Amino acid sequence: MNIILLGAPGAGKGTQAVRLAARYKIPHISTGDIFRYNIKNQTPVGMLAKSYIDKGQLVPDEVTVRIVRERLEMDDCKNGYLLDGFPRTVEQAKALDGFSAIDAVVNVDVPLGKLMKRITGRRVCGKCGESHHVDYLGGKNVCAKCGGELIQRADDNEETVGKRLDVYVSQTAPLAAYYEKKGVLLTVDGDGEIEEVFERITERLDK
Ligand code: ADP
Ligand code: ZN
Image 1 (cartoon, rainbow, N blue to C red):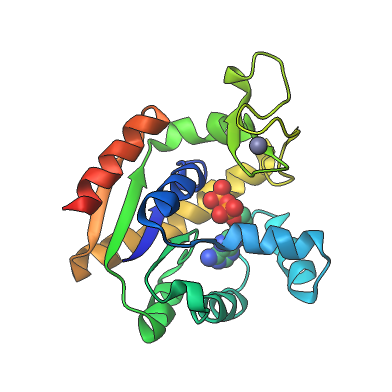
Image 2: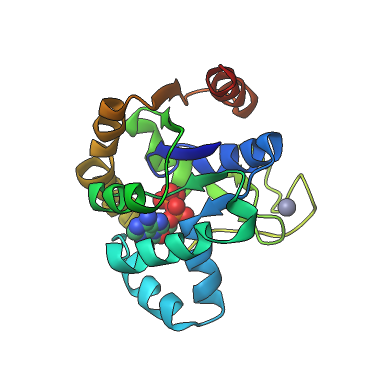
């Protein structure tokens, strides 16, 4: 099954993606993770991506599309994949249509007003990648899953998040209508416990 996870920054795409990939035994492909890996390793793509990400802007379509196309050509995508954070523009969606067929697009819907607090309070495990929220950490800075140290992403500060939310509304939100027209959109209420949202998604996908 070829699945896209759609949703605003902080809607919980990454959190759900890890669980969905395990359940359906398909690779989890996050463009944000790919860019962060490249930034960490100071590759040319990383340097370029960083100049946009730090400003809360999107990395240019041309670069992002190439990275995804190359990734989807790899062997582990033969029996399906889960895209998290791509496409993020109608242009990217059109490009994707040119090299892969999509079975389902899960739109994780969370009220915009809740996202700022979710993202600025987010702490990510440096070891396993799991996301946590400061409100549930009890002052500790340790991953409950693996014991790793938690860090705050450089682009999770209030100013950059504000810009990312604007970009989402203007460039990414229109994708819901794009996939609705194709008849593959599944909108799921993303406001709730992690397990609860996971159940809602799998219930729809299993049908
Ligand atoms: P979030 O969904 O929490 O905003 P991601 O980890 O998916 O964060 O992405 C972080 C940043 O990487 C984005 O704000 C954007 O700058 C860049 N990025 C990720 N995916 C794409 C994409 N498909 N197109 C352009 N830029 C992207
Ligand atoms: Zn961890």
